[in-house]
Amino acid sequence: MINISDSATKLNSLNRRMFILATAKIIILGGIVSRLFFLQVKENKKYLTLSDKNRIREWKLPPIRGEFKDYFGNTIAGNFEAYQLHIIPEEVEDFRYVIYRVKELLELSEKQFKKIVKKKNEIKPWETLIVADNLSWEKFSKINNHLYDLNGVKPVISISRDYPYKENFTHVLGYVSQANENDILANENIKDKFVPGLKVGKTGLEKSFEKKLIGSNSVERYEVNAYGRRISQLAFQKGDKGETIKLTIDTKIQELANKLLREKSGSICVMDIYTGEIIAMHSSPSFDPNSFVFGISKDEWQLIRNNPMKPLVNKSLSGNYSPGSTIKPIVALSALENEIISPDFTVQCKGHKNPLEFYGQT
Image 1: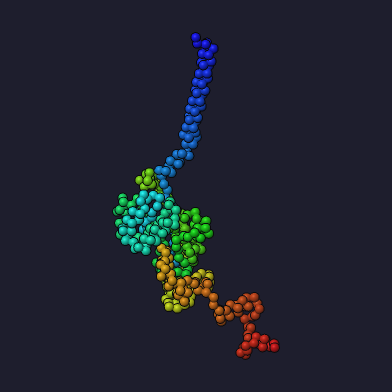
Image 2: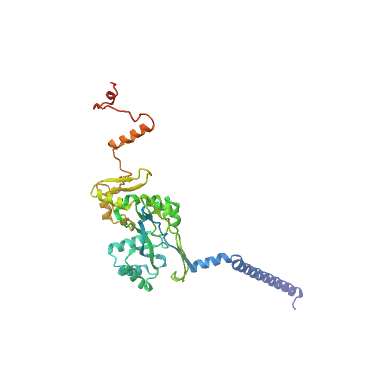
């Protein structure tokens, strides 16, 4: 016979287990529901933003640099459209294939190709590799026609510096070149607006007025697919161009100063004596600042650097020369202004070399 007490005990044990199991199910289900509520309601904005970041990408473009104009409004440092080619290594499925296709299309030399591969190994996978920063229109068009076969390659139309008067304003304006690590660390403004290929002032007024000239970045927003390829442009936010700075320099006189000093080592500075404005300031020999915009070649740099007449030195400002007799009128004017002498003061020079003898002392 079945013991009634044993049956009751088994039934109670079964009920207790079912209760525990049901409670556990309710707790687990409640946890899942509360987690779903937290993710979909409480954290909705956060995950919506993360989703958009996967779907939408932003690209900062180099800011458009302000211009320099002379006294009469002629542009002496302006900008032009430069055709560039960028690659983001992490977006390229087969980098080896793509880079060899680019080499073929752009007809790169073996030296240029090795330089690009070396640069790629030095940067992070998500950083932009600038393959070419000043392509001709023909090569730029050829790349655009083969984009279907070049995953991760981005043809870019950028704005770059142009010095139409070449060596005439080199020491006044200075020149721009690609920003390096020191430029970024030393200038917070450059750090904030930095994008690969950004050109900044290295010397002269280009460097002195960097904050006013640099402008602000334009921003492009694109919808991308799972591979990071652009599908469509969603928005474009245009940045502000840098300020235009007008100088007191007269280009014609500046060119004349260059002509007078050709093949000589020296400088000419022309100043308005009533206002103190600089009309012309030229140091010779000079060089073409356009050579530095996209990176000067080693041979050209050595020619400039090793020139015994020192074209890199701005002789008008940094040259050390004995003033000679040109200092005498300044000393005389200072003495008159401070009433040390009068306009009727005369000195009889007897040709003595010893200043003590001149004053009648021994």
